[in-house]
Image (cartoon, rainbow, N blue to C red):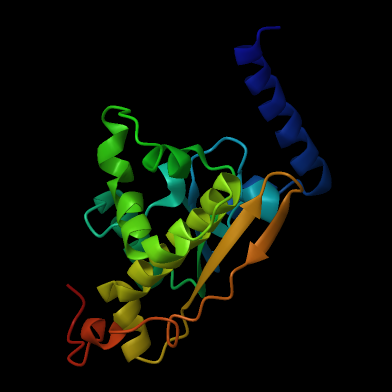
Amino acid sequence: MSTYEKLFENNRRWVAERTANDATYFEKLTKGQQPRFLFIGCSDSRVPADRITGSEPGEMLVHRNVANVVVPTDLNLMSVLQLAVEVLEVEHVIVCGHYGCNGVASAVDGKAHGLIDKWLYAIKDVYRIYRHELDAISDPDEKRRRLVELNVREAVYRVSSTSFVQRAWSTERAVHVHGWVYDIRDGLLRDLEIDPDNDFDGGEIYQLTDIGPRP
């Protein structure tokens, strides 16, 4: 059996396992989805959102891109975020980076990588913002690990600044925005305990006072 064909075999085995425990498992999934979480993570194949959180189908909406970058011009991500917050009304938005992220490392290695450099520009901006802190770290590995954390921190800030989240907060609906880091070396998740309300200066400029109808 080829590696490609093995994927279908794995799928059939997975279906058999699910239906063995609950014959109506897939029928229930056709009723719709009501996830409580949106997970914004890295595309890295070593960081599968459902596996590392133990989530079942229907429990977590997932968006992934290279280096878990959040920028307001990414219409794909912004569409997912609007769906999650305004339509599905998730309770938690999680931005999850991971140590050993090749995208983060490539953003600051001083080399040209082609088209991906345009995407990683946002991480260069993160380095610029926190340059004094990062330049004070002499160990290259520790510096990259810290940049991974700061990239998540800025992503949390950008998610919190979107009109979708601000609109939800203006109506006192509980939408919690979290920043996590996954460590591939031990498989554990770490909550960076970022508080969007108190950890950032100038956040009031994004607040909405006239919520009006949804666009």
